[in-house]
Image (cartoon, rainbow, N blue to C red; front, side, top):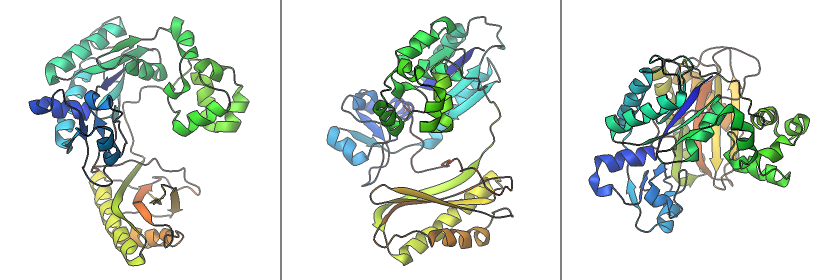
Length: 361
C-alpha cells in the first residue's frame, strides 16, 4: 500500500492568524478565556513558552504573560476542512478523515496515475498552500502507523517518507512516546519496564506485552515490527453521540446536580435527533474535583431517543455516584451500541459541536 497522512500545522491558530493579520507572529492560543478554559491549539510562537494543546488557559497565561487568547471560530475551520477534502478527492476517494485538519489517503491506485506517493504528497501540500494560505505536513509510508509518525517528524511544513527497507531501523530508535497509542500513563509504565525506544519494545515478548497492556499489547508488538494491516476506511460509521460540560464551579448539591443532569439530557436528545442516531446504551461520565473520572453504563432493549427514554436512566446511573464530599467538575452523557447486545463494548466518546473542538497539533 501507499499511504499518505496529511496534517495541518497549528490548524486553528493558523486560520486565526491568516484571517487577522494583527495576530501574525504573535503567541496566541485558541480557546475560551475562563477559569476552566482549555487551550485547543497554540501557535508556534506560544509553544516556545511551553504552551500546548489540552493545557489550562490559566496555566498557559502564566507561562506566557503576553499570550493572546482567541475565541474559536468553528465555521471557518469547517470551511477550510471542506477545501482540504476537495483537494484530496482529486487524487483518491480512499480518504479516512481523523479530524477537521488531518486525514489518511490510500493512493496505491490514484486518479492522476502518479507513480510515487511522495510526489502526490508534495502536490497536495502545494495546493493546500495555494488554496488556503496555510501549511500542512505530510507523511508517506506503506502503513497508517508509519505515515502518521512521518507527518509529525518535520513539522511545520514537513514532508517525510519512511521506506519499507528503512522502517525497522527507523522504529528502533523511535522514542516510545512517539508510537501511536502510547499516552503519558502508558509511556510511564513502559519506562518502568525498561522500554524507552522502539527497539526496547521489540525486545519484549508478545505474551508479556499482552499481560501488561491487554489488547493494545499485541498492537504495540506489531507496531515495533512495522506491522499495521489497518486499511484506510473511507466510510465511517458513528459509534456514539455524546455531550459534556465542565463547570466553572464544582457542584456537590443534589439540586444543582439534578438540574445540570436534566439539561445535559436535553442537549443529548438534540444531538441524537440531529445525527439520526439510534443507540441502546446510555453512559454517564463524571469527573471530580481531583480529576478522578468514572463512567457508568446501562443497556436497554429499545432505542434511546427522547427525554422520557433517557432521563430516568440518567438519574438511575447518577444514584450510584457519591458527590456530596466529592464535588463534580464535569458531567457528560453519551448514547452508543446500535446493536442490542447483552454486554456492550465501552462507547467511543465523541464530542459534537463543543465549546472547544478536539485538540489539534
